[in-house]
Length: 236
Ligand code: ADP
Ligand code: MG
Image 1 (tube, helix red, strand yellow):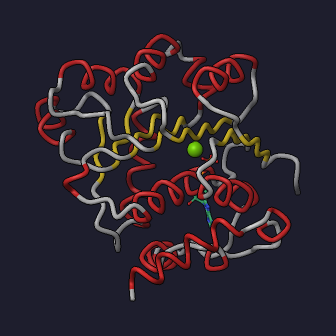
Image 2: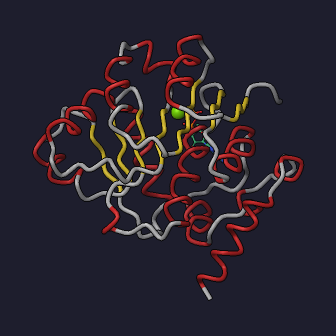
């Protein structure tokens, strides 16, 4: 029964057209599994923001997505919902290890994303972890090998990838670059390149940014395949 429902939802994702999803106003209109819809509902998230409405369906379809929308427009859920949903679609479990990597420029942003993820993912079986530096490195090191979704800042993430034998990146299905413009402004280009070089080529990449600068475009060319462009700034 559960398997049949999952199949139906995946089919709805495939059939969804942009004409259709542009009319959506609420999360529950999207083809999402019940566990995620419950997590969103219990967290008080009901209506879709513009970027969520436009980006979530394209991410669910498996496309690489390059999204621009100003600060405060709701980008966190625009990438967290597809990340959680994709792993649920694939029946991801503890045994599958790291399935998604989310990179953001600062500790504060990483913590914020983590807190939202814990809330909306509460009714799934997925586990999540933070690697942000400053905290106990050996605690992080022990934990990074066991989580399904990892959120981190570039420098600390690369350090774990280089030093923690337990952190396996060969099964990563999804990479999110949050605030990509700021990551580059802060001088993390080389660190990012080193991280990208260690991830499987077949992964899905979601790049979110407040602005579309030339360096963001260069990064997109390097890290994405046939990206869909989503602009949450045009509407409204
Ligand atoms: P951005 O990353 O684009 O700067 P955030 O994802 O941090 O924006 O969201 C900004 C604020 O809007 C947060 O307080 C968040 O809880 C709230 N928010 C985001 N999406 C929704 C939504 N669909 N419904 C209600 N509030 C939302
Ligand atoms: Mg943000």
